[in-house]
Length: 84
Image (cartoon, rainbow, N blue to C red; front, side, top):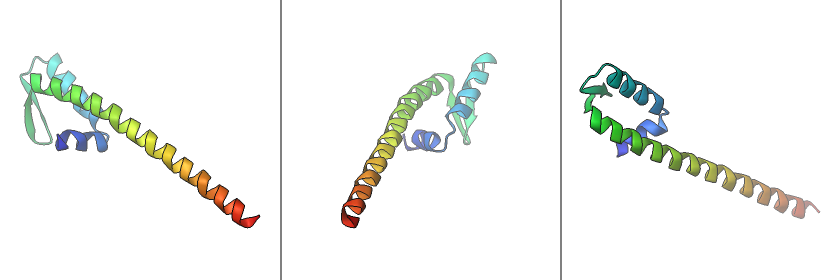
């Protein structure tokens, strides 16, 4: 699982999907990614996990951005209050 999430964090999901699609188009039994041979069935499952993980990762980034914005507004209000 750590390997899959490292691919998400490194923004390499599309690279994996491209290799998977090429594998399917050529009727190959599997693909090699990061020096690891992965059979087609497992690769399909990995893509499902990646898509779910990518959604969660993006939600996490959005949450962090919202939290940062809220904290910035809070500290701006504190600063304005102290200056008045």
